[in-house]
Image (cartoon, rainbow, N blue to C red; front, side):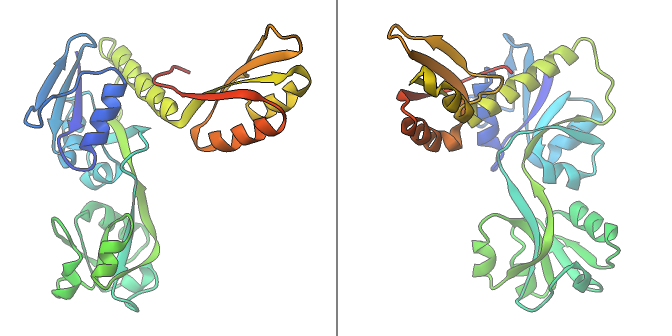
Amino acid sequence: MLRIAVPNKGSLSGPAADMLHEAGYQQRRESKELRVVDPTNEVEFFYLRPRDIAIYVSSGKLDIGITGRDLLIDSGADAEEILPLGFARSTFRFAGKPGTANGIDDLKGRTVATSYEGIVAAHLADRGVDASVVHLDGAVETAIELGVAEVIADVVETGTSLRNAGLEVFGEPIMKSEAVVIRRSGAEPDETTEPKVQQFLRRLQGVLVARTYVMMDYDCRVEQLEKAVALTPGLESPTVSPLHNEGWVAVRAMVPAKEAQRIMDDLYEIGARAILTTAIHACRL
């Protein structure tokens, strides 16, 4: 049975559970559940603190896990990313009082407060910057006001909390993070679990594609078919079927969801009609 670590709380928990549900896996019904067995899919889920997941996976006790790229790197665990999942995206930045610094070189000899000591220390070392790093749990914005540090390094989404604290970001981003699937580094494929691992990854990839694309159907004149196909090339090529009315064809193709409205407008302009889009709930490519 495949053993998978899943975040039990925080910004990773809900989206991870939703994705797993869309992928056809049984999920917990109550937040207090720490373990769920899905006998149909031969998977056992363990709900753990997001910061601990990389440690459990690197130990080999669990086969794979879902956590944040930032948490994986910060942990220093012997685990590696094998699939980005596209949610819980964030950017890690330095911030300080206006005029404190313009870039990372200005941090030499200064103190940086952060909840991600591993990431920050490695980032500074890689760039040859000698600065002190103070580890704090939770919100770090007040560290500067209280004199604990001169600069902070934290996750920045909208920047509102930083601005409210009178701080501004500076320099290049330290890293960009998102939810990822991880496994132990250098793990030898096990003939018992490896097929289930690959099946798990294919299912999640199918969910990612289904969320990114929609299916578009429309009718168009034969003489406009090449123009229409150029607008909707699909992944391989569109499906084209003759209609009862001579000179017309029906076309079906996957198109990026974000571009669907524009594509519908362009199709209409060249004479396509009965243009429909439908959601894709699951797929395999």
